[in-house]
Length: 129
Image (cartoon, rainbow, N blue to C red):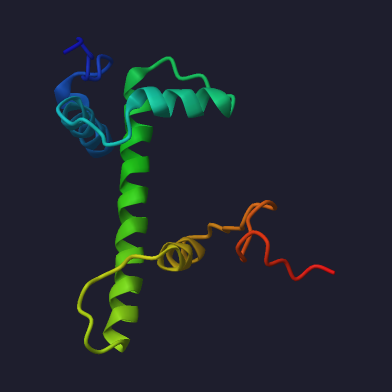
């Protein structure tokens, strides 16, 4: 792979604080891990939001944080699914629904809305008068 330069160059190992040592360990661990969110995708969305990251380690850190957030959100949605399924006796197959995900999103401060072109009813059966 590319030469990342994952070490902190400024201070000697003996003069490092605990926070600096923790940061050093994180940087070293990040070099061996491939995040589920590709760094190119992260860099694209960072650029779209006006953030210019010149340090590849920062982009990878944001990718890792995004991965963690998505994993936590998915796990929360799965818990909602399990709770909903537990109320229904008989069918043990888990079916994750959009409502499970929406509920997990709401708990994490994310507001989901249907787009204006979303139709709740099939085409041709309009209630409008």
